[in-house]
Amino acid sequence: MQHPPISQSEIDARIHDHIDELLELWWAEQGASKPKDLELIASVIPLPRDQAIRALDLCCGPGDVGRAIRHVYPNAQIDSIDRDRFLTSICRAVNQRERIPGTLVVTDLYHDGWSDELRGDYDVVTAVNALHWFDEARAAQLLKDVHATLGRGGLFLLAEPACLEEPFVAGFNEWKARQAPRYTRDNWQRFWSRANALLGYDHTTLLGPSHSNRIGDDMSVAGWTRLLEGAGFGLVDVLLRDADQVVLGALKSERSEHGNRSISMVG
Ligand SMILES: C[S@@+](CC[C@H](N)C(=O)[O-])C[C@H]1O[C@@H](n2cnc3c(N)ncnc32)[C@H](O)[C@@H]1O
Image (cartoon, rainbow, N blue to C red; front, top):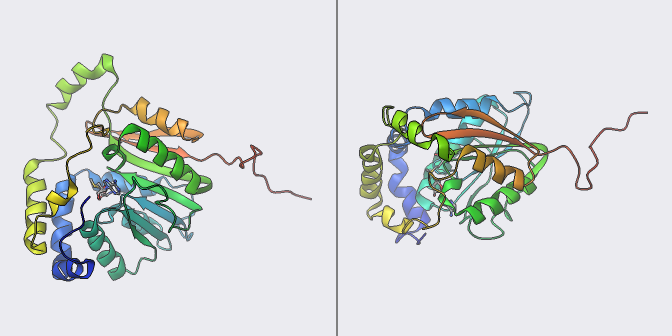
């Protein structure tokens, strides 16, 4: 992604008085079922609700996922990472306003060492509408990095587009064509035209062309599961699937680096 023609502080200043308007447009663009998905993601975390859990929101954008977790875990620390200076400006502004503690890193996840500025040892890592932007080899590496950055017994929760395996595709697509679409071009246009007007330049041109080998909509649930298992996750479960996407939960095994189960010694 190219650098914007204005500084970070100028981006922050230009959108400062319009954060809620931008969030409303973002939520419309993201589709009506997203709040339910995020509520599910936060709800399945198997830790006491008052615990000061440590979460990382991968490809956070404006930060919806982290804040959904914070809603259920009012003492959570939310770290966030994304390459986009405008979307993370929204995330920073809202999280500061809501006094949510955490580190926000702006970097491209194609760079090795993307997690260097993060503390690691997370209870939870999330990725919502994120990994399908990468090619399969990079997504596989990111999943290994996520596995490494989780603490023992940590949980990875992801929501990504998912197609079906070949025998089911034709009938599924027929059925899907009769469902209300999650995303519309009009809602995308409304968000970005307002963003560009506020910023004073066309931010969408900075995103560059889509990666030709990106996963996009072409990974099945079985494919995502294989990638997660290949990265070392011990238990993978489907939490939800609809016409567009799948929500998966993947658990890092309690086993230590040396393969011993982590048990507390008694007596
Ligand atoms: C569809 S948005 C989803 C944002 C957020 N997870 C949400 O649910 O609102 C995809 C996000 O992935 C980020 N992204 C895409 N490619 C990236 C990369 N190579 N490195 C870091 N972030 C990336 C974009 O900047 C954008 O914020």
